[in-house]
Amino acid sequence: MTSETNLLETDILAYLKCHEEKDLLQFLTCGSVDDGKSTLIGRLLHDSKMIFEDQLAAIEKDSKKSGTQGDEIDLALLVDGLQSEREQGITIDVAYRYFATEKRKFIIADTPGHEQYTRNMATGASNCDLAVILVDARAGVKSQTRRHSYIASLLGIKHIIVAVNKMDLVDYKQSVFDDVKKEYLAFSQQLAFDDIQVLPLSALRGDNVVNNSKELGWFTGPTMMKALEEVKIGETKSNEEFRFPVQWVNRPNSEFRGFSGTIAGGLVKVGDSITVLPSGKQSTVKSIVTFDGELASAEHGQAVTITLNDEIDISRGDMICHQGHLAQMGKYFEADIVWMSEDALMPNKQYDFKFTGKYASGSIVEVVHRVDINSLQKMDATHLELNEIGPCKVRLTQQVAFDSYQDNRQTGAFIVIDRLSNITVAAGMIKHPFSIDEDDTTPTNISEFEIELNQLIRKHFPHWEAQDIGQLFGK
Image 1 (cartoon, rainbow, N blue to C red):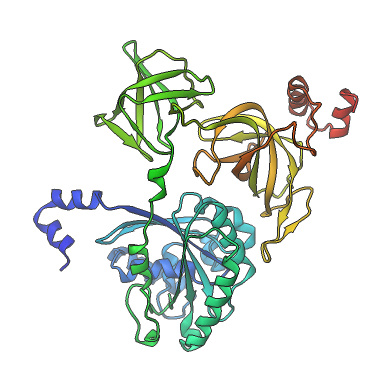
Image 2: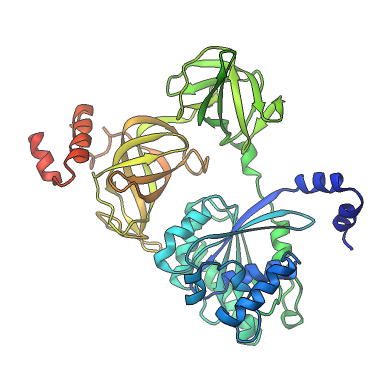
């Protein structure tokens, strides 16, 4: 009997408090098709006793109809719940699962391996602290393994566990593991990872997932579960500047006016001096209000309502920062773009850009280059196709507050929305601002009036070509 189980039976309040104080690790599984991502998650939950008996019975029943493991239970069905996923034996959409051990709480995102679902993988990775990248021991590092690794690096994931899976199919040979490890580490030198662990395992057989394996006796490192429990995360969040995107102006009565949202970075205390962007107005924090009462301070990730000592005009989409530690303000920036639409990115086409709580219209004026996923080389490009990635220059019609994605993963990120279909067509990570006057490739003779007029024409006359619009301006 574990200490937690004993506490659960003797003191439920103490158990709940202990569980509440555990830190949370959000991680995803990714890699190429059929590397065993869903099976690994099923094995983690099964061997750590996190599957209820009725769930296990249902999976055993479904395994006879939809399983891919013959007479054995197919643990992948625990996360592959869509009918089309079971029929094809693949993962299509991101599936999330929650579990906890005595040391830590976990949220797992199981992401698809097919190239056509790369956008789903990017979505699943956006909020994760760690990526488990599976590699089939028989096939080694594939192009999709490289693609997912590169996207994980772009999205700011610093901790990587490379799970060399299906070791049972290569007779648990250490030489095979060493070759895969050498190949991946050579590729990953070009990526911005702080910590990489390479582990051999068999998700199907349970070797080195939760329990040690005699078959892998030559491996002296941790099991997958131990690596997940012991990886250190969250150190960088304490160094972030305070960022509070306003989501809602809370005005329940004439006596109260607060600004609600989720803190996107740093720490705020009652009495702190703040500046509101874009207006630049200043004040001090009067109170920090939550559903459970007022707080003396609040930090990254907490949803709060902040009241100020001065009456300042603040609206949804504004950002509150500490005085002297402001986010950047601007209309022009360069960002890494992951294109998610079957319709190619067209430079100078008008799109909507959504930031933390702010919408702005604008265009992508230039694709700087496209990144070749296999070699990470920079390729000349004028546009981006589905699942292609590259740095682009963005021009908005109004100023927004932002940070570089490297400094803050929330205030440095945005999505691009097609204005006609209202479909999200891309995800972006801001690198740095640029001056339009210093950029040789961006026209400097475009006035704000022309931009707004161009926007209105495209909205009401979407069939017009760019050259037709240009003729209005004598270009």
